[in-house]
Length: 271
Length: 296
View 1: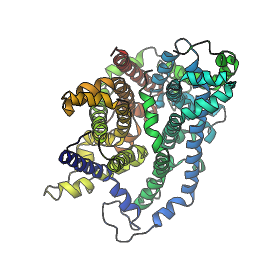
View 2: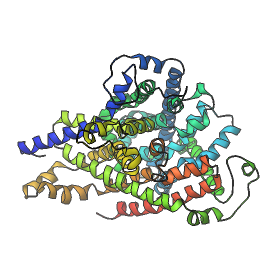
View 3: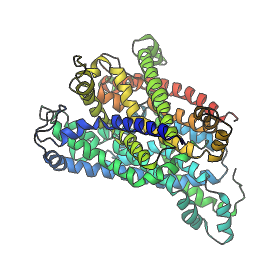
């Protein structure tokens, strides 16, 4: 917007400065992760190497990575599939009170999950679902209100005239949904999937309570458990493990980056 | 509003209803469990011991304890401070300023800044907590780079200024959300309107304050609603950084709830805390939704 070159150079400098401040805390993480003799202090490593990473992907840690992947991708996909099937009718049929209902659900979900966790645990225990599948279902239940609201908002922005035209041309409901509605709200669906994925990937409390054996731990719980194992804290392992743990969310973000802005436009649509 | 008489919809009502079934089922489960959590708040149910089996109804006793015992009101105040400074002042204002500034800058710089901010948001809570504990510790980055070179003795920020540190960490972590939302909102403001204001002699500040802000007001209200509520119930970052300490300086309601329910095992009292939190969140939401609905 600014056309004044001196002004915009000043802005650029300020922004660059801010970006540097923003990433500076990462220095500790990387300096320790690549330091083979890490002590947890902020220092230039005397011996640089990948030993910590080798340790962080072998044995239990590798297993935990797969567990996290399964939980996060499973939750995101299940939420989006169930969400789409319900959000399209919610968007198109004039069901009385649907908006008020959706907002109430979203607000209800704002209740700290610790509150719902206790009954959820009892139910999972009775149903024999204290495992990965149980975690996926529980997280989907917790995610669903928000997923529904966002998906409905995205579907609302697809012009109904297109669907009318397709119907006149002889398209069936299935064709209308798969050929018009879904492609047009692709960006929104990607964003919703991404939210559910990162949410489930980061989730800590629920898998902590549901996953009872070390083999079933996802990375969040594994990281927590790695603290204070064998007495002293191994900072090299911990920081390398943290980087691996943080990588997929960052990766998925870069894959979906182009869709993010479009997707976010839907968040602000009036409920 | 959509027309009810769209033939491809009305002739397939059964299929559409079938599609809604799984979601309806899961929502039903959620409502059922929430009702259960409400019911717990009137009991003296405990996590372990005799009262985990032989619990009894205690009426409103849990809710009386919220106000008569120390803890809840202090935690509420800590939460208000935490939400106000980290969400409303920090994330929202900073996110908006960034979105407004970056709107005009060249694309490389915009991408770099965007990615830097996003890194904070993408980082898992527990890793972010490690990072900030390390950065603000006595040998951490802030001391090594600023405090010690200026000749002061190193400060243990995480112990001496626990609440401000947690607030800064949350601003660092959460600004990306506000930024993305405002950025998308500003993109929807048509260039013609802004150009017209410019031609009419509006300064940059006036253009933001008088032209852009009113147009994106619904987005502002939605953003406020989400980040206020999220921050209000945000748990892992604070818990992993300070556990609510030192003392009770950083014990927000979410941490208080966890400590009461799981560390002390008072599930009944814990449920009462979450019901109280829900009531507060509900009032806040009604306030924001009013803001959202008001005619432009």
